[in-house]
Length: 80
Image (cartoon, rainbow, N blue to C red):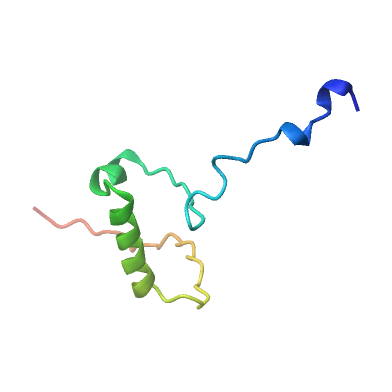
């Protein structure tokens, strides 16, 4: 290893950003129309928690099936 890559751990300082926050956070970017409605992390979290209670968890959902084009019967012309 080259000398410039050797790190002197005796001069190392603790990471000032490590350990901040008691829990792991996930950053999500909202579309602008959604961000207009949910203006704070608390409002987003409360809406998502409400959704969690509504949607069953653990059940396998059926994937949406592709809709096939329905053949419609030929329209008859009505006399005017």
